[in-house]
Length: 380
Image 1 (cartoon, rainbow, N blue to C red):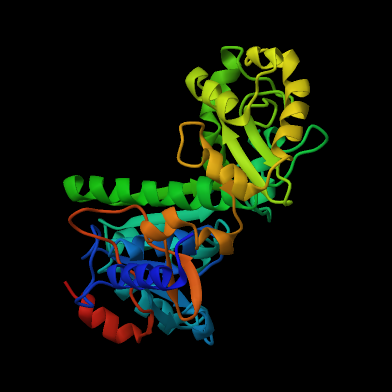
Image 2: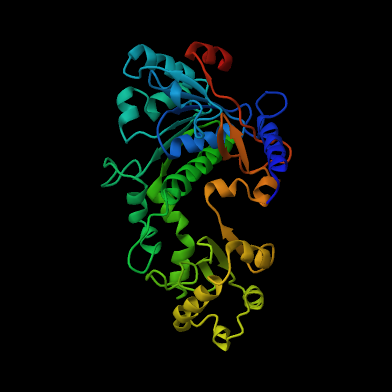
């Protein structure tokens, strides 16, 4: 690990880079104007990414919401508090949307329409607007109006059934539905629609459903099943913990390490560095041999500490890494050297990603704003 002073210096450098030297908006989306209707989960995460990439994102939230301005997912936005049940406020919102490039909302289907802010109304005022809708089940279908969370959305896609132990599925945090299948697909959809609008002069609705996105993320595994290289039984495949050469192992210290030695040359190096001279390890791709080989590897990795295995394997082509907690991850030399984490308002958090060579992303301070002042600034 790097010494503490070196870590602090690197982290300060990361913060300086993420904030930018001029205080002006930077990033490839600088100049784009986005109105976010405050929500939870994937919507705010998507808008965080868009704001990091330079978009001028204005969040419309309920009265008394300022406490959320400095959250990680809420960073970099202008926050306007208003009552969407007030018809005067709705009229102001429509005026604001007339100058926006995109709208993002995460209400249940029909809520925006009942507010008088549905796509037909808004696009009539601003035909070039991209109207991003983030839901779990989508805008139509038998479940469209039902409540749900990440675990439910990934359950009906085949994703949750494929993740976990042999005995039962295990929720993969809310990474697959909310953020992978939700926020990232919403960002891709909004950006694609913005690109198309630059050519056609016409906006459109982006229906981003977490069940759609999570199903899309399963494309590789549907393909593998079709060609007979994947079974629907958990812990029986080479990427789900079934194979001895792709998994997590406990060390003598109680910490864990991960290996992903799939390719023959990487597997050979694993055997060399771990001292796996037993001829049974020759049967790398024999599924019937995997359970016994996993038990043997458990004994091998339990013989040394995580630090020992890092000295032996880290940085090699074994495909190895220590399994770190979030606090440990912020201190890892590779993550420090790449300025992957920054600290803002006393909170460690990931820096913007991905990285751009000419128009770098930046984390800007959130600010409270008035809708009239934003409309004045946005007036085309």
